[in-house]
Image (cartoon, rainbow, N blue to C red):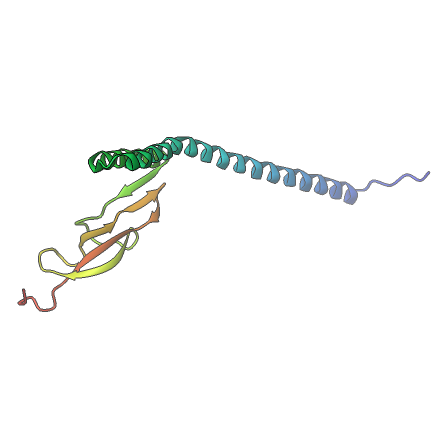
Length: 155
């Protein structure tokens, strides 16, 4: 039986292969941990949102039995506030830019209006609010922005 010589190159190669395998195992473990964390956070979100879904179901059922629109309106307001509260709990923030300077980072201009009542580039109407999650704009506010009147004498 012939013994295999163990030289510095084969030792380095063996160390390299072991380190490569360890790193691959580490990467796979981290991927599993990230996936589990996502699933856990979704589970928490779903547990928060299920009561809202049930309230919607109750509101729809009772709206078929009863034509009391005030009661339906009140129920929808309660559900809206529930959803808003859950989204805020999970880090979603709603923002308004009404009467502020237009900033394309936070708003999307969907229209312009000529006026001399406010300075140019001021948001005069909000079509929809914007939403931020952890300093990242998820949905910019859609706004109407003022611009200088072309013919100020016309009213």
